[in-house]
Image 1: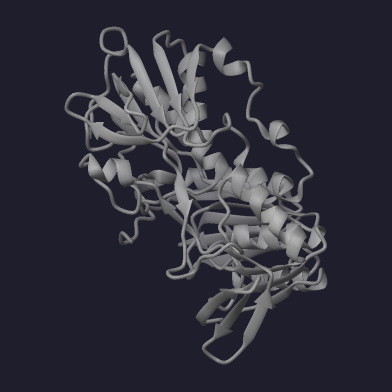
Image 2: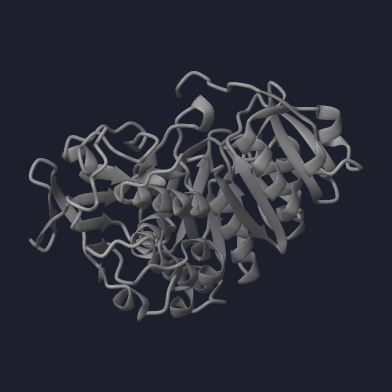
Length: 423
């Protein structure tokens, strides 16, 4: 992995590719921690950095105007002497000469480079057309909203986080909504089956047709509508289709430059890639797990923000141990769902509260160590359990389940290693 530069002698220009929350946070951190050299922040979208979580919520519904979703006031970047280049794509990287080439032909020399290139929405082979959408950007949200309003019906392929959020938002726009999920449950990567069942019920109570165990055999788009056919003969039609089947890390630039890539850009604990002077953070980065756990990619806003800050400190030569526990949130029909950690299908869960009443905290434990949490209506619980996860110590399960015992008072024992075979 690359060496940390001596900021007093080597660091003059930091170039950041990607103006999402990881890149923007890194740029801000460089300035707030005293770097006075050149900072260049490059984004491939035409707008300045904005709050991407709003894409599937307030931006999609139209409740928030585009300018209100901006991460910072328009004057901020100039005031911080951060060169913001929008609508630009990096197409070439020479790590030997430390030069970055943009699609415009412009080249930039860097002392340190941060790749915060994010991800792109995964597509289905052979599925395209004027009525088929993916959702990643502000522009995507505007186009999808216009189509939903025009056609009045939406077919969501994929019952993950974005798919469920869009379904809820589309219902608020008055659309008929159907969600098709390949697996037996919604949000299967995030929540246990009992919680998934309650979320599915919530959607059905709000008029969404939720269909699981769907193996699609075809999706045809013609004459202003789409028709989906499953292997078992079930069929659905809608005027608008959202394909929401995951995110692919954007590693094209890194791979072409010869950087080590495996399910993202491989970095060490200081966010250094396999090339000197090149760092990576955010959705595109594959980072080491805490306490020797599995490597992972975090595709959530807060994790990308924390990584951007940590990467900037590494660039400045002041790295700190990265022990952030990734977390995220979702709001559906007025219910706030928060989750944190890295869970697996075989984890056990200890539940405080009532899943049926949608007022609970479900804590994933592995070898008696908290490794993840899902909280509905209990944000304070989530913050406390994140601390327990970060400590990595065994806990008393009975105390963990006992609501008369405050989570802050749950007895902790010895530290347990949680390393598992690499995925």
